[in-house]
Length: 128
Image (cartoon, rainbow, N blue to C red):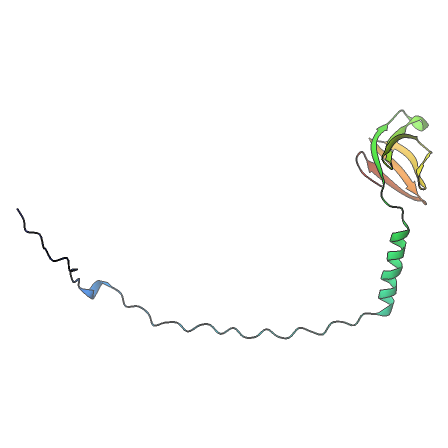
């Protein structure tokens, strides 16, 4: 039977195969960022323009109408099914929908509506 070392001490290995560690690296110094530029002064005319724009937006009616479907029967006999304030109703071409909106025409599964001379084309499911 071969002899087994009874000493549990580690064996010494030659150091020739272990590379030397490089010297420690100093932390990188990051310079302070430059100061932020001064804010541009606001022109009083720009403020007045924004305020008048907000007034114009507020004067438009709230979105409360939804195009539920269209009945394209040809010409003036076409109609749209429009949900107005929770109630779906049939609106004929040329008829006022509500709040100044008018159904102008039906074509290609879309309704053309107008409000104060501005014409829009809406598809089924869209609100106005």
